[in-house]
Image (cartoon, rainbow, N blue to C red):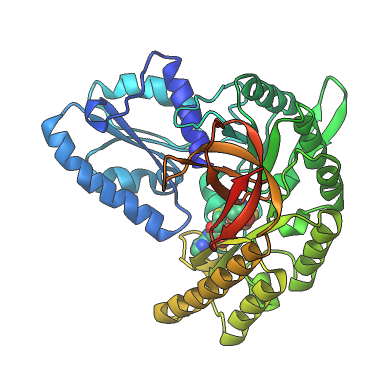
Length: 429
Ligand code: SAH
Ligand code: SF4
């Protein structure tokens, strides 16, 4: 989401004549887009600000701005504590940036952090500045109001709002016309996407939106993130099954396998509900990969709760997981009403157990792919050897193979010959 936001910021500033530089030592402004989801994300930004002091000593006119969720969360505090920061801009205030940049030239320090109920930046064409020219993100909604007990997002990104469906389709069409072959539709909970389309006087929900984007061109792959398990509908699975260019990959964050933890987290589903959704995915899309997010050591988590998480990992057999230690965030329900009572060494041990189990499962899942042939969208040259290319299959698994005369952006068929837990290795058919 931040990556997509940085592209919007770049677009807003380019329209006013600002230019992006590749070398930080050539810039007059340094804009740092930030995340507030866990404490360590914020600590990294604090460290970066300290490092930038040296650069500012040599180039004293350089102005530093903090953008995004951390700016929204800390506002004045950040201004008071970090005297080398000249401007602070929250996620809904990026349109103010050009005027702010001219005002800070007079030596003012400025903060714009008002959250909006309507801003979706739908008229702004993102500048794809760090792109491979083949895959791109499209933000389809902003904000979140699910208020999971551990999560800071509803406080930093404001109320949920959906973007005009026609503008999303236009953006996907433009990307395709410019050579892109894959788009990922982004939102905190894409299943609650809602738009009233004035021209056809119809309600567009997420399944309809997926269908509209899938119809842009059969050669355009469509992905999405993130689905909230409470809202993953059979309608969506049916649409996915009907369009081969909608990728066979669903990210369905489980967070915990314990009914008690899920309730405390305010996730609004039970492990049984979650497993029923997994069954539905397997029914409609037998070749779909499933990935997840999980939090180890949430407030009051017992050994039994932790075992329930390991158990759900064994049952679902995820292809990939983002695994985190719980980090208490200010203003959340957890901070106000619960105790961060799992000792850090216990959190670490539980996280390590989940990581070890998931590593084993991912390897076994990949081993089952050996011998199969997949259609791969080629993205670029492999990091390991310039004689090899890499791409992804519909399931979002990275596949490496010898390059021959293939170029990025092409679809090719690759037979998997061996694998690691993270990568499939294959040969061109
Ligand atoms: N909207 C998405 C999640 C966005 S945040 C969803 O609901 O699935 C990405 C992930 O960060 C979450 O799924 C969760 O696993 C993790 N996360 C969020 N807050 C956290 C916290 N306080 N401590 C640790 N991990 C957290
Ligand atoms: Fe956070 Fe929950 Fe919203 Fe995801 S759905 S962004 S975890 S509050």
